[in-house]
Length: 447
Ligand code: MV4
Image (cartoon, rainbow, N blue to C red; front, side):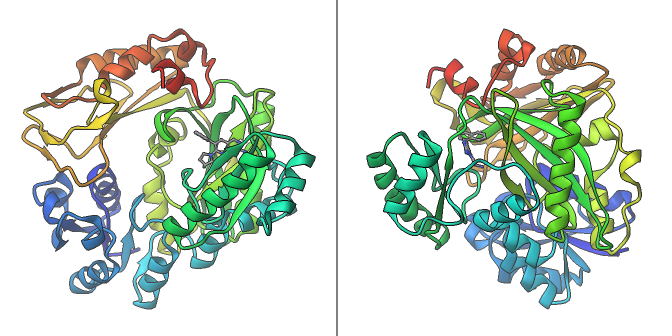
């Protein structure tokens, strides 16, 4: 096992990783920006090294500065968390060429799965369900129009290098398809330096269901069942839960096995997530594979009792998975709500500033993952998520009741947060019945 690791991240996930390291008897070194010098992860780390000013390009995204900090601290490995450099295969390659383990999958599987065209072709070969569309990338507009006629409108144009929805366009006819291809190409070229786009049937009224995977470096891969992340706004997840409330155990087993098959075929190890759309007829379609630990991993930890971040650390150190597929059981129901420092009355504008009063809820089955405390100043430079509130109860109804109680206890003053929005959603009939799709929140808020 490692003796010391560096955390190339900030906020709640840096705190989460340091805790996992300490639980395993590993020392944790925080690499932090000046904006985070008074942050909790810096305080609970065994050592902290300032890597630069607040701008991510000069600190959390700066490979040279992070590697320099890792060399100075003489760490065995780097955990990238999520966001920032977590899915940057070049960073993983640099780490390993410096003899520092990158806590994540191999460079090759990051490249393969990170390219959505290659990932989809791999899925087709292994009978993982996908949305019908272009065979590979779009070569020319005339060909794309022909494909669209075959599969029928609406279609969606996606960037091969994209993730989280950048470089995407929906088209309802030949003309908007032609202009959509041009726009998506330009956006993808500007954002990722790769204008490759592909086409598929647009799935309407879909839900978002994803499967958590863990694989070791000895060829063992298991799934930890699924999460339902349908409750989102502007492609930002708001609420995640496990199990998915609307699928049968047969559908669940098929979906999870397909996800394992895809990851096996990519030689995958570490934690990963296979994201699917579920149509209104409960048909599944692959969206993408995320080669990192995700924000919503705690709901899976609660229902399975498996510590995903500790497993990531032992997998990276070369150890075998400590359990088999048949030992993984889904127990009860977990729901996570993301608490963002945003003002819902001002179109969710981020709210920086100092938290004067901070009082987190507790009690049986209540977990709060946060880096915040009274006196904490939220810097304006990073994303607005300041806490995750997770509850675990025997049933979904009990989990909702527990969340209502916990949200009511949660005090974060005077910063505007999404707590009141979540309190409303817990009382919404559609959410309570899980009669929702990925556009539900935006429709509800009138956008
Ligand atoms: C889709 C889709 C409908 N049909 N693909 C959005 C992010 C990226 N990962 C893929 N996305 C979508 N792909 C087909 N064939 C709708 C979306 C989508 C979406 C997906 C999940 C959660 C929220 C979303 C919001 C808008 C569009």
